[in-house]
Image 1 (tube, one colour):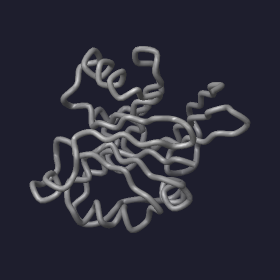
Image 2 (tube, helix red, strand yellow):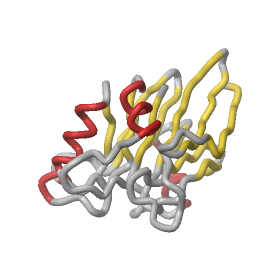
Image 3 (cartoon, helix red, strand yellow):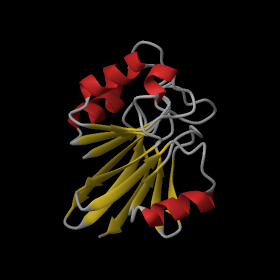
Image 4 (cartoon, one colour):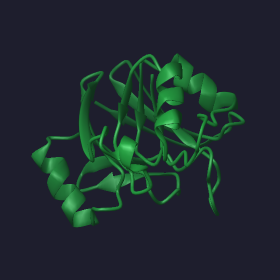
Length: 169
């Protein structure tokens, strides 16, 4: 399983609870689409994850911003995943970047709005924010593959799955 989180906006702890904490601990890899805010929060999430791929958001403190890239690509179960925070990209620019990176899946954060959609023929996943949802519901995303099918679920920290898509490979 791949767990996708974003927009923690913490100061000293990971703020992971319930199903979100379990999903981070159980995942083969965790992707964080930015806005940890502090190095302490990054370190706390990194300590819970078996492997972490992360990018800087627009609210990172300088010490962390210097440590993280603004974009990352990761291979997972035969899929190439592009990760950006999203605050610097229009849909057009993000689509161009996804093509350049040969991405199958694009992960963004920033809006705090959990959603699964399409971007230029690619799967777009925004996990929302499990810790600072603002006017949206708290969420994270879980991706898994079985029998050649990709399943993406948006889940709340209480474990409710509220949006799911499946795609054949």
